[in-house]
Each structure stands twice: as structure tokens, then as C-alpha cells.
Length: 118
Image (tube, rainbow, N blue to C red; front, side):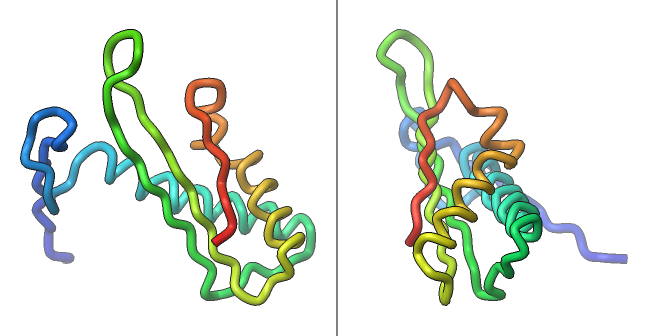
């Protein structure tokens, strides 16, 4: 049996909370998006017969704040590191991964997300 981990939700500063190290919806969304994007990029790379480096990484940052009209909106930034790949090959993997990633698909048309190469 594995030990259970307790998670604490922390209200973000942008909502008037303390922010901090606890979990919040933005951190969870970023974690899920990063994992999904890496999987999508690996899937696309396999279709192109390109190996994704073992030390590749995807860093997703998600912010939240008021929209111009009403309510709140998200801002998402994706930075991908693909050490050892030529820049054009790496960019193709990023673009292809973005096209097949379910998170990218789900946010299409509502968020302006352009993944970048580190």
C-alpha cells in the first residue's frame, strides 16, 4: 500500500489570497498540460521517426487574472527544452506536439498559446 499524500489548496494572490506553496487550480492545470504536451510531442516525434532526448523537458506556467470584460481568464506559457536536436527539428516537434496535444486542442480559440523552444 502506498502512503497517501495530503494536498493543500492555496488561494492565489490575484484572487485576494496569500498565494504560496500549496496547490491551486493553476498549478494543477500547468502540471497536467506539461505532462500531456510531452506525451503528445513524443507521439508526434515517433511518427516522424525522431527520438526525443531523454533530458527533454516541458515547463508550463499558468497565470490567472481579471479579463477586460468580466470574470477571470488564464494566461499560459509553454517552454520546451530539447537538448541536442537541431533547432528546425526541435521546432517541428514542438509545433507537431501542439497540434496533437489534447490540452492545446481544448484551449484552442480561447487562449493564445505559442510554445517556445528554450
